[in-house]
Amino acid sequence: MNDTFFLTNMCPQVGEGFNRDYWAHFEDFCRRLTQKYPSVRIVTGPLYLPKRDQADGKWRVSYEVIGNPPNIAVPTHFYKVIFAEDGTTTGPVAVGAFVLPNAAIPNQKPITDFEVPVEAVERASGLEFATKLPVQRRKRLCADTVCALVIREYADRQKAFLKPEEGEKKEKVPGVPTRTSPRNANL
Image (cartoon, helix red, strand yellow):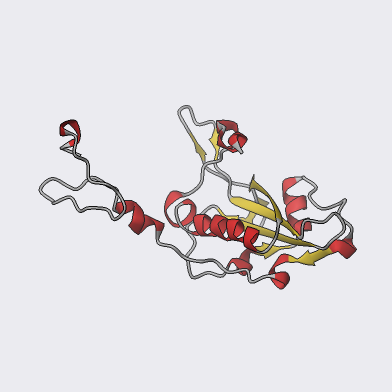
C-alpha cells in the first residue's frame, strides 16, 4: 500500500470537477465493492488518447505539459480496470473497465457512461490485463452489481477546515476538539 504514495506513481489530474469530485466518488465506489466481493483488484493508469482535428479531420494526440521547465505530461484520460472475485481460484470474476477524461465531469453523469471493454483499455495502454483469465470465468461487473456513484460533497466538507477570512468568526467543526493552547489561539 505504501508504494502508492511514491511520486513515481502519481499523475497530474484536473482538481475541481474531477480529482476532488467525480474521480473521488469513483474511488469510493471501488472501495465499496469490497462489501460484496472478498477480493477486489484494481489497476489504474494514465492514457494519452487521440481526438479528431476539426481542421483536417485527422486524429492527433495532444496534451498539456506542465512544470518548470515543462517536462510533465498531463494525461488526457485515466482508466481503471477492476477485477472483483468471490475469493476462490475457480469462481467467476466480475471485470469492469472504465475510461474517464481528465476533465471536469458533472456528478450526475452515470459511471456506466465510461464503461468500455477491457480490450479497449489494453489497446490504448499497450498493457494486457485479462488475457490469461479464461472467458468462461469472466462476467461484466456492471451486470453483476449496481455500478453507481454515491455523491458526497467533498468540497463543502473541506471548506469547514479552512481558516476564516479576516473579520469572520471561526465556526466549530463537529467532532474536532476546540484548541485551547495559547500558541494556537489564532488558528
